[in-house]
Length: 68
Image 1 (cartoon, one colour):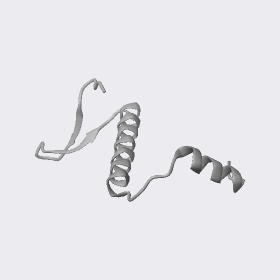
Image 2 (spheres, one colour):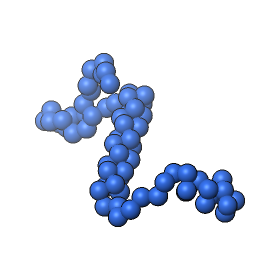
Image 3 (tube, helix red, strand yellow):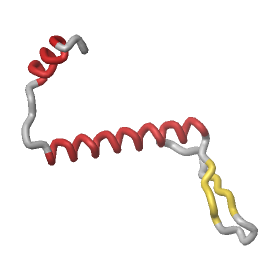
């Protein structure tokens, strides 16, 4: 993720209070954050799972229920 130069909003004393992002850069940042959250959720699910079902078994169940 390349930035062209970070821009800040500052208060009357010149202290940085906020960051300005290009909308495309913001969208990429949000997308990366969502991917990271999904990865962390998956890691947690794998870590706490007591058992797993085979993909083919799940797929057949979904077909049988008319959901696939």
